[in-house]
Length: 551
Image (tube, rainbow, N blue to C red):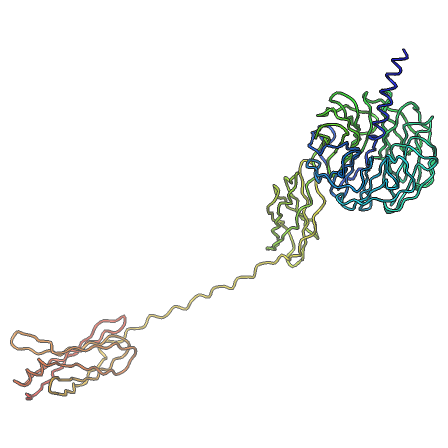
């Protein structure tokens, strides 16, 4: 009988030892404004991680950050999406037990160290050790009302310390010297829970400085974690079985609740759901509750010691101190990244808006574009693309924001686009009807005249010059012929294009053969002149020119 008790005690002490390191509370959950999917908290997926004993996880500034009690200079890991984790350098190899985020700063506390049991980081990547006033076993740190508050399992009357900036810390008197394992903030109140004490395993403070002990209805449970959500404080315990949840609307009056049987060690709230994780169980190391009262077991992919869980941006993330490269599991889907800056191009009473892919592990499946002023919208299907916002007022300047959505929810709005102003297209200038060019009235062809030819006889040629007067534009053609018997010989030709009504000079030149004929005998020339007006009909005039024989 004694052996059996001793065996149980040994296991119990072992659990105390492990949970002393692992009893990290859920950090205050942060949700970036999206509406997360209903499956979050119910279906869990194992993720690959660096191999360390990961004690605590929190979310802030779009980053998940976990801290560890083991490792050499790498006791922090970070992830933007809960899936891909990167180890980070830590300044001291303390047993880092808890991490939280507040006022733009990550703050971690440790259970050991020498005056350096706090480290801080503005980005989760670069960490700085901070001086602590007492070397207690600091198990948990929380943030609220502009104050960081840490609680400890050791020390005499100084098991609380506070800091406005995470750098300078002041020890505070705790209500009792209990083994305080978790602290949270909600509804204007800090609440801490303990794994030891007699009917006083809760203490509360409105300011983190003055603490009051509160009665707890169940004394033999190890209250290792507390969280706040939806107007309710919820604490979870490792044992004994059956009544391992306490709830309180005000942090003062607590009620035990029935739970699935496991060693529950962490709890958080997000997406309308309380989620608790456990050290023990077979494929059921998560339980969830919409109200903190009725709890449902959930299947877990790996039976690690899940010592901390948090919620951020649509995703629950739990970390464990065990496992081989699989010390994280996630549930839900991250809300997409905030969209890139919209690009707006104005039209007529409308604007075309384009969104580029914001990239990330949880891409958007649609975007909603919203106009300001007025709130008119359009929707883009997919991770990028364009849509037209209709029904806008011409002459009014508009800016546009975009939200991205997927199964995880809806992102916060993007920055506003540059202002653009829809404008009606200009009224087109009517094309003038061309004035038809009047068809010129053909000049009467019978009104043209031809003067008598002026003949100049040279040694080798005969040049005949005539003046032709026409009534308008047209074509003038002239030919001089001789006839001997039935034979008709063309002695010369001349032509001219008349551009208007005028008198034109035509020169008809008879060459050597004609000059040779004139040496032998006189020559009678028939001068035929024709005029064809534009658009008219040809008219002809003939005259006879007699040339005397000339040697």
